[in-house]
Image 1 (cartoon, rainbow, N blue to C red):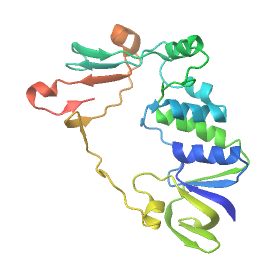
Image 2: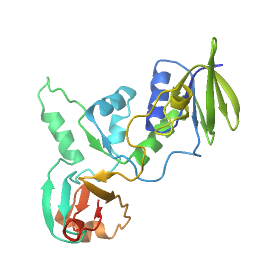
Image 3: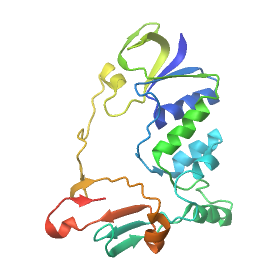
Length: 238
C-alpha cells in the first residue's frame, strides 16, 4: 500500500507529487489522460507559485519557458486583431523581471516575481522532473471512478483495478471524483461559457510564426484583446 495516491496529473497533482518526494514520501499519480495537455491553458504563475518552483529547484527552468525573454508581457486592446490599438497595460519582459530582481534591495520581498508561461509547457517540464524521482509512480491513462475510505486507509477504484493508500488527494479539477466521494459540494459557475468584461468571450490560439517579426513588431504583447464587437453588438474576442 502506497502512502499517498494523487488523483489528477495536472500542474497541481505533479507539484504535490514533487513536494511529497522532496519530503521522501512515496506516492502514485493517477490521471485519465494519456499524458499532460498539449493545448493552451493557464498562463500566469504568480510570485508564490514561483517560490514553490524555486524550492524544488526548477524556477530557472520555468522562467526559460514561454515567450522570448525580451518579449513584453503587456495586455493590449485593439479594434480588431489587425486593427488600431486602443490601450495597453505595460508589463515587463522576462529579462526585465530578472533585471529588477538583480537591482532590488536585499530586503525585497518578491525574489521570484510573476512569470508568464503557458501551462502546457510547464506541465511537460514538471512531468519530466517527476519521471526522474523514484518516489513517484506515474499512472497516466487511468480513469478513477470512485473512492472508499475505511479504518485502515482509502481504496481507489479505477478502470485498471483498485489501489490502496493511507491517503488520497483530489487534484482532479472541477469535475473531481475525489470531491464527490467525500461529499464536498462545488460552489461557483460550472459552465464552460462565461462572461468576460460583461460579455461572452472566445479564447483563440493562433500558430502563425511568420507574423511574429513582420506583423507584430511594436504591437508585441502577452495578451491581445479585440473589442470590435462592442460597437456592433457581436461577441467580443480575446
